[in-house]
Length: 429
Ligand SMILES: *Cc1c(COP(=O)(O)O)cnc(C)c1O
Image 1 (tube, rainbow, N blue to C red):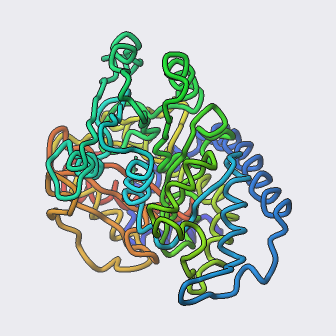
Image 2 (cartoon, rainbow, N blue to C red):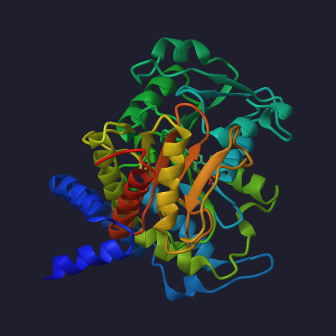
Image 3 (tube, rainbow, N blue to C red):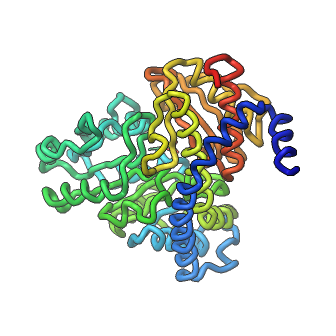
């Protein structure tokens, strides 16, 4: 029988019968949930396809450019496609944007001037942005250029502190930064709808303030994006959701023409802007990755839901929980101990198609204030749309798990983490 063979194959790949059965019992109950996600995938797949058709993407777009990269048709058209997908006036999508942090730093620096203030109304931003802004003193930070920062934390129940936000907005407030995803925190991720409510509130107080959304890990999780609900700029990484696992590098900023232009002048040079920047032959991967992204995000979401339900059933605190609606692909599981976080990451690493034989260890990482353990056996180095997990070695000892180019791989990875925790006697089934 085919099922028996599958069980045997799992066993030969380190998954005991007990772990397999536990996992399959959990998965059985998730079918309805998975069907619902498929509806979002269908919508987003068509949205991306339509953007490519409307912009007449052609084979010539995949040709390589070198040197200055003048007249890079594929690059320019890809930016039009991103603008169509995000329903914005313009976009900047470049391999010269090295990562998500760089894209965010670019959007912030390009659109603020000395004396301006940046406000985060949703609490502390992602760790690496602390040094960009200068929350933690750092060479070249915005603080060094006389740009100040204000922050209003979320309320204890995760709600917006509207009174404090209102009083934090002043004549110097130039840009409001809103992080969609929880990042390395256990607060809930913001839905696009809630981001829309927050932006409306802010624009009523100060219509000309720039609302920027850190969209990392959020793309294609819902049918709407923050740019559909008033965001002036949405920013993200191509080695997360929108690169679909195929983009080898890059970041994007989509938004209003004026702000995107500023980003282009900052990225390359005043006077040059978008006109330069060779793409060295990677355009095909950027297009194809975007095309695959909605289905890849679906796989990652299903994996996250599977993990949430497994670890919730074992009594661990999981954010989001097993049943609540999803607004990004990250799953947090709080183990409460370093051993739990480490075992989980060992399991993810052991499940990888690349470097499955290496054992991850906690390490100091640039931009992070605590040692971090990262598991990533990825085709694209550091890609976190591929099955990956990371956890900072600090309270509350939570692991952040994301990705999976296919659901079948994500499922195996999660079973492997479970096996690791069982083998190390951290849990018992
Ligand atoms: C990943 C991430 C970033 C930074 O992106 P890198 O590509 O790692 O530099 C910023 N914000 C959030 C919410 C992220 O998830």
